[in-house]
Image (cartoon, rainbow, N blue to C red; front, side):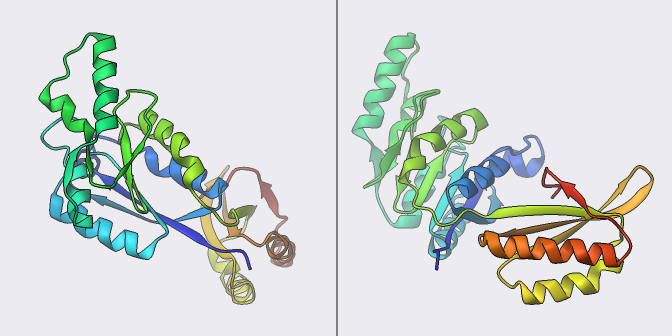
Length: 254
């Protein structure tokens, strides 16, 4: 049996909860992780508040193979993620020599001042390993199964690419999207029966209104491609029995 590898994402930042910033990191990580066989099973959003970060990190790292955090590792007073991670693991925190050397070289090259605020970005919990940042130099870090990444999407993506090789995945989740001009209520009983027989596949229904017509997209997800194909055949047959020709959807509408 193919192993299941799971992950959780912790989005950190008052700006996300206030609506000032729209998160772009969740969809990117969900897609990238799935490609290497890691299923993103949970996402939480917390304020820049140490107690909330510590509680969330400890809960998520105990229940998932990997945890990714984004945000709160910059140079300002509200960037408290590094300290919070250290507290979650019960570790001291200090200046990582390699992280400091990278920042010193970067600021010497750019001619900008490496002040105390910027130097805070070299602080890493004891025993943590660095996550490379090819965009703006200041690294993220890893402590056990927790990866601490930047909140800025372009930087977070570059950091993820640098750590991808460290992840041990299982089978990627495949999806199949089929729609029909049928309401959810009409299809509900048949879908429930299919879900009962295909317990290893998640079947979701998503109503739509297109061109003046009501319809439903059925998105099925699972790691067993043969079962997914068999389910697709039965789903198409169900739609035809209910009086509508199936519509194959290339893009997942969910």
